[in-house]
Image 1 (cartoon, rainbow, N blue to C red):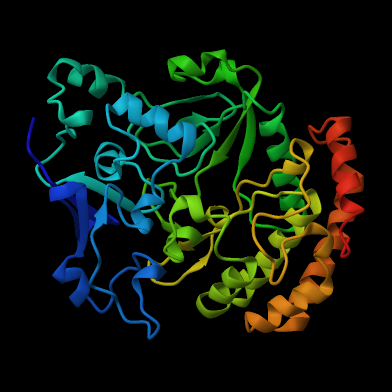
Image 2: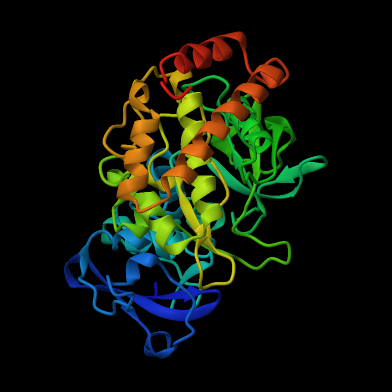
Length: 407
């Protein structure tokens, strides 16, 4: 087993920095001089800029974990545990998890060991040689950030999707059904379809029978029904990657703080400073829409920026629009809008407060919210019986709507 302690960080295939594992299970990130000196450098992340817009070049070491920007590239929950187990890595040792999964990360980042395609040492300091070949053969080497069990896939949704044998590549994400909550893929498909009708930027989506997806990992075979296939917006048709980052990365927060810190107002402030008026309009549309459908899980990691020209930020396409109140009745959103996260306080006054504090034009914000509400009612009443929604889901969403002042 090679004693490698340095990982190379590449952006658009070009080395920009290193993650070095040092004594005491600490990790240090450093930017390369070439990247620092390049005045036309592609953006790695907004969190790497100081208040004056200058590149930050000094970083503190982290123990066991890596710094939040890199930690947020890794999956969470069951998906992290599952992939770490297959790779023979402890889930909490993030340096080694990036080592194993870094060939297919969200956006245009890749991470690799400096000595080639060797693997991290086994957990607990063992040399792990007796199990090494098993881990290498069975590991899936992608990292799709998030909690829900999902895999990259290639192919055509009409002819069938295939999970790549080693989990690398693929222009689709397949989100599997939940063992705890019935109908999650169907409900997400319905809400994303409705969002597109209202005018939001939604990637291509399709429901697919589980049995039609080739190479699903073994233990997922107990799942039945339909999965949701979503076209990856961070992958271009020619195979190149577009860089993205979520707002937990932007704000320098670890994934477990995705509900506790930040707000819709703070996201709006970033979009007002870094994006365009169209990004602000799209953000208010999505914020209003997810309030109307009762999505209490629009946390910081469910909002992302994308860099189409590698330098300028735009709001990334929509994802994870789910009416969570159907399964878990809740009176609060994941984040404060401006002063409150209560659904029954989502009003024009609350949006005016957001506009003022985020330095956005109040008329633009309110006009967008009103238009979104009108379009929602129009398409909801026309389409609710044609979308894959059960009567109980429709009833739950409509009961929720009655609680929202702006609705």
